[in-house]
Image (tube, rainbow, N blue to C red; front, side, top):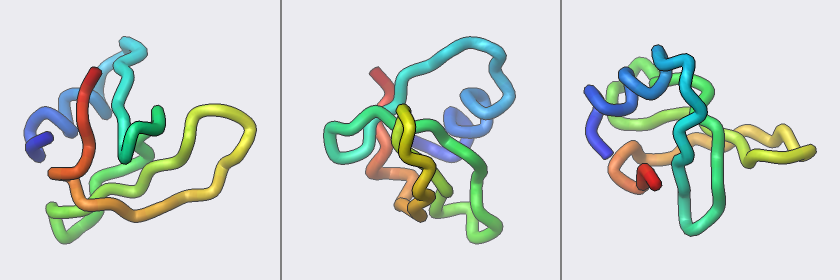
Amino acid sequence: MDTNRLKQILSSSADIEVKYNGASVWIDKLNEDGQTATVHLRGPLEERTIVEINELMEQ
């Protein structure tokens, strides 16, 4: 995924499915470095993880 698309997803009111390593995640924010994002798994666990933007895949 590229930075522009990530920003579009963050600003959208739609429920856009994004996967990281095959797991469905919510994108919390684009980090200041512009290369990583903070995400958490969809579901009851709210553990946050920092991942490379290019490893996120829109479904």
